[in-house]
Image (cartoon, rainbow, N blue to C red):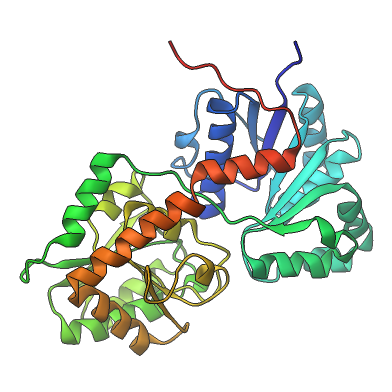
Length: 378
């Protein structure tokens, strides 16, 4: 009987972020549903434990603890790991992991799949180093972008392999029925005196443009006082955002949760999900909110329009425009029927198009290895 294929997800770290959550979900499902020998490797040093805590026991996690920049000894350790663990497919998530995968493959031949998780230009390394661009075009079996914008960038940089570039939108797991019912009850409540909850989940970094969201929230509070903003996440802009909220006199209406596990419990208590980014691939946080059945208000950037349809499951607004963002939030919050319809459309869209199972099945097809169905627990 042939041995189980070995599949490894390669990330920079397992610190909190959408890319990392996707890689862990993929590794978990490959082990529990498909029966692969599933590994995940982080080339850098992970400082938070929220994402690693989500790993299934069947998934083997190895951390190489390399420095922030490319480090040849770390690449050599990765090559040794690939040989010792008999890895058949190495799935690189992000630019630096791809460089490590290519370097390691020179000593330990392995099939490589690469996913670009964002829509900004971070592939300059390959223009500056033609050898690595040639190596990628020669050795990467499939290039995937999580949005059409990301895929277009891949085709531009790796023109010699353009026919192997494709869009693969991320997927997310579906919540339990009880949790979804809880979310429906919160969303469908028509009580006029109940505070409405707006939630966002992201790293507090410049590309997320949380300053625009807080400015929009201040404008919204001029028209509707009984509304709160819940911000789940942390990052380098936290102090600046706290000061901005204080200056705009909305600090008492904003809850900064920091990084947290069980985000779905927070989403289930929310009325609308908001994303104010100035650049995105396809936000896993938006997909998670959609899976709960929330209407989405988001900026029309990157791959977001591929999952949020304006006036169907949410509202799309231009980036860096607090006034239009505030107006869109107000319109959704004021109409319980609209929230209900948009939320149901969000949920059905995930079920039909962007479930975790669909995403994993698509990647398994790209890996091109025999599927081994995991045995069910007795």
